[in-house]
Length: 305
Length: 150
Image (tube, rainbow over all chains, first blue to last red; front, side, top):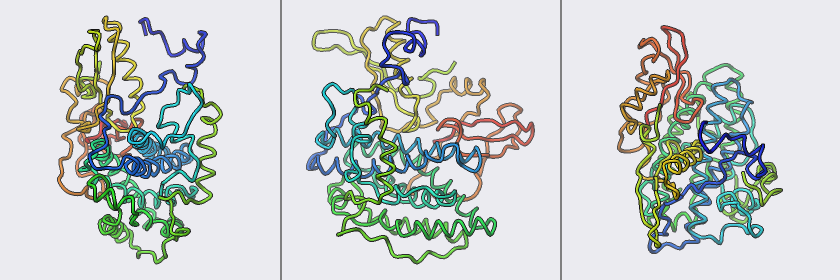
């Protein structure tokens, strides 16, 4: 470029090494957006709810991005990376919205740290503070595994986002309206591959059935009632996941029928003392995922990226 | 050349006065897709160009509502896309009620931006960037990118 701002490589040659990583620095995904909490809503509850939806997106995004360079062919590699990116974008907005609603949810960092609130929430919280469903966190398996997981995840998330478009919280409503357009593509991709694998070879069908059997017990948590979500639904801000059960069942039934499969009979994975992912009760897989995802950021709490 | 205004990403520009009477330019942009990694670059480009044009204080705000639609790409923008070998989006789907599950192939396909043939085939609904799908022309056999309708 022929202007005063030089090239992205200037930072490497000059004395200011703080810009070495990418050079665009942090940006606020909610710059200029009105983040006032709606009347009659407890900011702590709103923040916790945004963490639930944001953590679902963040953890699922991390699992999808692990597929990068490992998918069966280039097109599916790109597809999985695209879906990871869409969900990462949703996570950034939702975590930023949580921090704006109630700054007390943001972990403390050393004085003068440039890390913005959404990054602090993603990289400096411990596993027990994450509120994602356990379906999002379990370790990746084969290609059939990611297809089945995405079908369950995106079917529930699309149904949720469709209803969240009318939230009294304008940020949630806007994130939802945009997310609907994105997640509709994710669900179609997963649905098509589900049917393709089920109707493909003996081996592809065997793998699909194995993935379905392994993941079905985690499906119910997506549509399980939770007191916080119920309370925010009553306040016109959130969506009660119990209200998603029928529409989600209908879509999964449509895919299973097209695939020529019966609905699996597996009891849902129980919580511990009534607590599930939404309450910070997770599997070991989340701790390992976070260790990898957070290690660089935690080593450099004063870093600019 | 394709501008942020042609893409429908630039939602507004206004000059306001701060408490001391200083001039501040506020440019508002909206992401095409939520995770669009180009947002930071767009923000920096806007700040730099406005600085070059003599506006020392610039703020870039994000607008999330209404969500970006490919219908906002201007005629000039569509011509620029075609000139770059990309297929421009058709009208965005308008729907009321739940999004239907689509398990079959798409009902309509865009014509090839290179040879104009209507015989094209969807390779993947996900391309090199979030806003594009991959197609292949069965006439001239060339692959091409299509900006998705959203």
